[in-house]
Length: 145
Ligand code: DHK
Image (tube, rainbow, N blue to C red):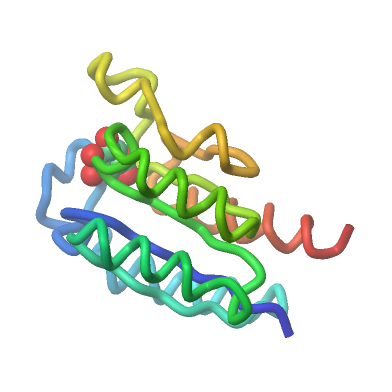
């Protein structure tokens, strides 16, 4: 059975109460539960991690090599700043699907730039928590090829 890491970055622990008009009213626990259940339906084992710390996220990406076959990543604001996360993804050579709850391209200009996008399989943005489900579908399809 393939394993997928669902990795959420800074401030996503506050989902549900944080700017619900932007990020929706579902909590991180809801998102993670949805990912585990949808993963099950696809025959994927889903492990979830959230951290507010860039180094912890980098360690999690390194540790995913050999233990997971793909990553669903919402790097939060590190998306727009972190060369280190980009390098970590490039180093482990695992398929990564970049997810954003909001449509980052319809927001402030500084959110249009993603350091994750060049090293990701693809990007899903603007579909709220459904984006995580779509990302798991994309990885499952990738594993089947
Ligand atoms: C989440 C964040 O925390 C922001 O910093 C990003 C992303 C967008 C999201 O839409 O999920 O800019």
